[in-house]
Image (cartoon, rainbow, N blue to C red):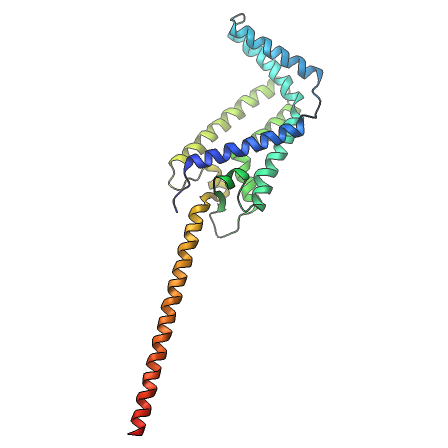
Length: 241
């Protein structure tokens, strides 16, 4: 089976991300922003403007950005938790009950299937989503922002984003250049993405082959009946003689 066209997978993923982002935004827009968050957001705008106007150095910019980002991330951890939960439900639970499809994949006529003889399970969908849908990275971010000091969090955050950035590059390259189009997440989860159009074509070919086999069997049975009838007639004729 040929791998699905890469751009279809990209478009399907972008559609899914838009859907998840919109729903997450609707769910979290009712969470009131703290005064500190609003203050730091204003400071962030001022720092970016100052850096653009070359009023501060690169070192000052990075230091201020890190301080502001830490506070903002800590204040928005509840939003990140909602995003993780929603992403897990969408890419795991919804995909499972839609037989390997999300809304994006359904629109682009793609689906996730198991590469072994076993049925596609939630565990397999969860494993691939932890990697490719940033669930694991976001969980690590939540844990570190809640349990670590600012300096430890910033160091860990840099390491985590670098590692996952490299992983995403590897996944994208594998999807583009591997013959079966399987990324690292697919190999670990023992899954692959296929085109439902190709599946329909395969089923049509199989159905056609079955019909042909039935026709052949019918002809064979007919020939057997004809031969049997001829044999019976010959036997009767011989007896009469």
